[in-house]
Length: 252
Image (tube, rainbow, N blue to C red; front, side):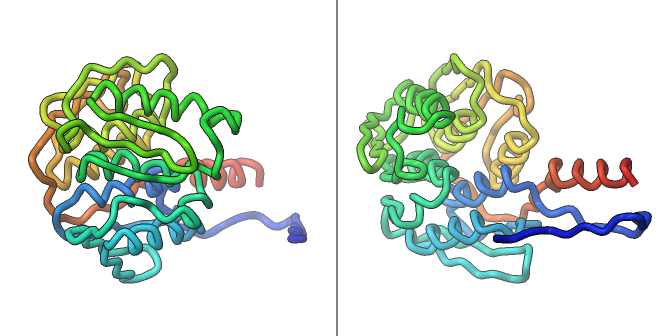
């Protein structure tokens, strides 16, 4: 068992680097699947979720080049499968962002349930997945659930739609944004989540050539484009980590 022994009595001083936002990174890395080119993503946090996501990308066929502790180069031009490996996807909840990314790029996706749970099997996961599935259905995709969430777009491409989220959901907002980036037509998400990592995902996609407006408000509009190009993007600092250090400074 890990334990921390803190001996106080000394003032804090110096400077600290804030890592990249975890909640942004776990969506932006799967979103790289939408890019028909090479993208460099900087300021990635050093966490196990990121390691698993990069392994999933590699098994899907992406070329992953780790440049240093916080920067990675991803080439998703030659994806060989739209089925995420269950043994890896099962390890983290954020694996369900691969559904929106794969649907948006290839019109189909097979991704294990987060943590291996059914829709109603884990409190706190049911509502976000239900809202995500509702959004995908409005955009012309059929979705069935089992050990995997299997989704396929009618005609092989998602289509724009007006979607109202009954429950504000970060996961649904991000997944629908990714699925809509390359969709045929315009998608409007109403009652969307407004967190900073949603804005960061939109900024990443826009840097690669997407047309997304309104991120950070309760109405997000995504105008579908034919393709996303490569580029470089730095993930925002983590506000929870920054807030933790601020609290430590205030308490010293």
